[in-house]
Image (cartoon, rainbow, N blue to C red; front, side, top):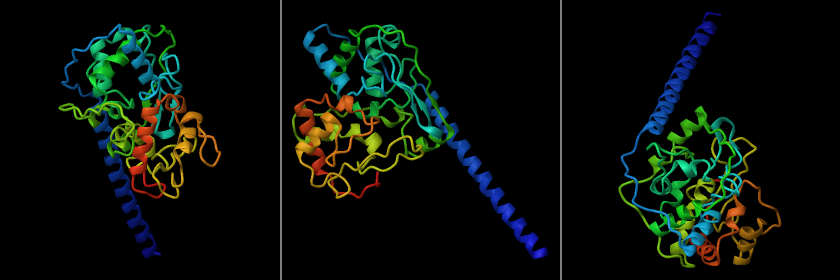
Length: 303
């Protein structure tokens, strides 16, 4: 009996140590996340101003509705007046705000909007949450100006901004680079990598491929996004593996992008912003397809 109680005591001590160490780890990770979000970045507001040129505005409209993904339901909404909340269980809840002239569109100057797009830095100098600026920071100044110019032309909307709150698990996984909520710390603010002029090649497609990495993983091989509940669909494998796009043709890919229908006939979950990807032009779609064909085959789930 004494041995039994000694064993229980040892187990209790071990469990206590594990809980203590785990608690310290979680506390330090959450504190680091909060401190990083509170950091004010010393990045000046660029000297970029809107254009009234119809061609520039048209280019901005295209980018907002396609590559930028801004006008999708789970981002800022089709009218840019605010998107549907993305409820990610213990990770948190994220809502794309109203960016029309009646809301953030009025609060931000042209240069501040440009800095937000390029650096993921808000008006107050702190990092934006979850907006994938790190995936589009390669856009040239002309495209940034085009986006800002188009945003100035959209109809005002008075829809209130939804809630964005990052949970404890979301903060921990962000610090472990499993998910990205703290955007600005992922961007090198000292230099800019600019994509080549749009062309239907893998050279341009590698930049467009960044738009997929947030969900499909760094290697684009898919798998469940860490920490997400079952309500969030599992991203598929985009590599030319048997569990991914092996055997696909460009026609299959075009059907996926334009209609949201996979090669096997199944419809994609609405979580994938097909409403944005269907607006890719021929050059962008061919470039992305060319890039995906260059990826090494990887089994599903490698992220």
